[in-house]
Image (cartoon, rainbow, N blue to C red):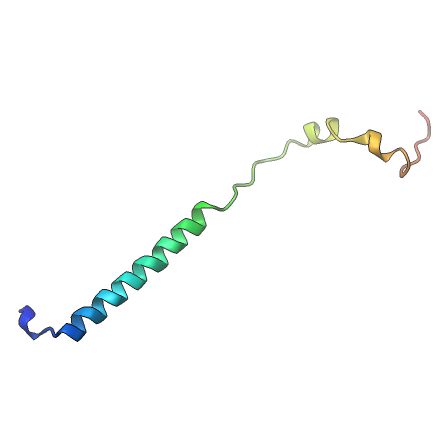
Length: 63
């Protein structure tokens, strides 16, 4: 059954298979490095905002 396969065919198939594995490995590695967005709690962001740095930019009504 395998006698009809020449060296060129075997090497070509091996090259194609290795290229496919390299592409799949690269895609898996890139997918694993993506950052997951964590949900943001707006109340915490507002409470911990650096309002003391805005004293020259925003004029309050002094309340």
